[in-house]
Image 1 (spheres, rainbow, N blue to C red):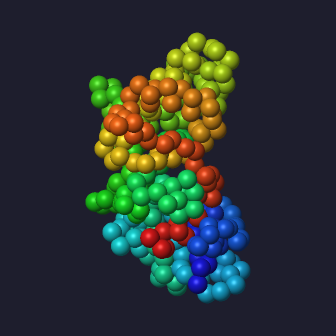
Image 2: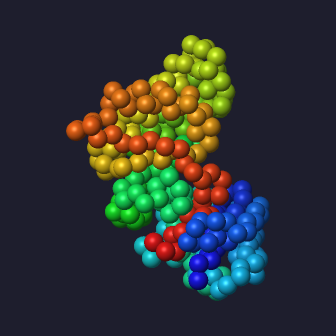
Length: 294
């Protein structure tokens, strides 16, 4: 059997994919609104998605992988901690609900798994991923496997600090975090209200607008310092960058390389490879299915 189902449970959409776990090829995919305010709606929608994809399979499926926000339980059967969103998610037993074996993992970890099995981290033993979007997520690939750590909290790389003396605390109470430095959610504050989104900020940078240039390059400098610090801590072969902010492309990658040339420790010429993520919108569903074989 090589077919499996991956489901990505987000706040607005449920994305389901039937994939070939040997190749990563997506055989079928479905999208359904989540309905965050009513737990019975999204629980039923996940079940309907899984049933529809099972019927489309041409062989018995291996199982179901579910990507969701929050911290999974140690046995990866449920989400143990997700306060404030998706009421009813915490402790919900998906294997019982769906009548099939289900493995549950954090959504940023699922994005890493997609890259590890079929994307930019394929055949890599040690790597890490940063998802740069509204916030900053991440994941660690150590010795060829997803590293979840104690209480499944490992990989929250956006909640490491790049400015310890800052008075700005992020959602985990970390002062001056990487998420605060580059996440889309803080663009307005960082630009004194001049820009509202990273897209607007990068447009200003490309046009040479002084404030946009200062704000954007400061953020990239802090990203470089963070990556160099993580390279010292974990010594990855590859760092994968994903998320919506990567639409900036060379406006991000070119100055990032300049700063990494200054800050990264490179004994004997060792240099960490930086690359863009292979998967985008469907990374959660694909990675959740791939996690069945981890």
